Image (spheres, rainbow, N blue to C red):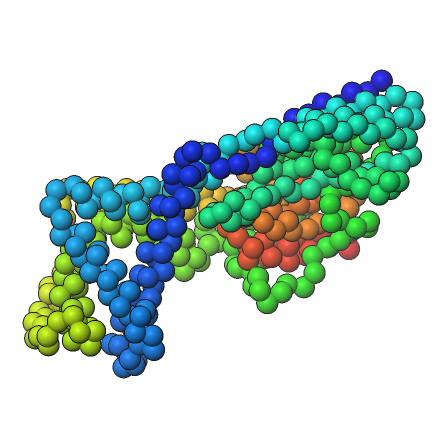
Length: 408
């Protein structure tokens, strides 16, 4: 007799999530208005166009005035508000701590002879199902995700699903945090039931990447190194272009840098904005703005005053951006030698898989895109930690060249 037990947990917003939700929404509104302000100034100064929507101009002006007032506050009040709005990783806190994991269902599967009995215990009630083994067609591995406003889609892990032909349907059996754990449990269950283990969405036969789409143009992150004994596909920080690195660096440190320079920049540009937009919006009379056009004067417009607090904030911004960039562009290497494909990562054991056992190579989209070299009989190779869909598309394209070389 075979028994399979599992507890499946979902996701539900808890008290911390309820507290963080208005702050996350407020920060996103502030960023939207800041972008509107930036575009408005660009049209006024560079393109010489009047704003098409006066309401947007008024909201942007009020936002800018509020930031100037915030920056001019004495003491730590302004920086505390800025800390709450821009420095705390509120999306990260909400994703990790703002949602609880209540029990979604408890599963007990019993199998003896050619019969299967399935018990499902959920908060809404219990369900019991008894059927023959012939009705079970496969054990499926599927990505689990849920929409969690205001964060959007969040990954919950990997589901094990029992697929049946008669009656037609699927039953959720278990949920694992990692792909390897889901594969191990699914492989053992499929072997016990005598049915195949499948990855949801993968057809029979070897599936190599299709031509890249216009929506996900590949980046230049992975370097292909053909050789006589092995073909290597290397991802390292040296392969990342300067523009990619700067974009990642600025994205991860922008909030900290914003607060660090807020006091100086807002105070200096506040008068400029009132001078330019005040008369048009009816908020002030025309004035004369005196600008220091010398090199030190121009540099002072964009440089913060190096108080101790701002210096610490800038150092924290650079540190956070550097650590985030290192994680985002962590080295990895895929190599093909002796009819085996190997995955190497710093600080992790090497993974390998015989080429003849690879039945599919595909990209799994979602919040954390992955590339999977799928095998039903051996633990598959999963390449994660990618920067986005564009890098996943590039890896698929170059994997085709790597896998075609040994078989040619």
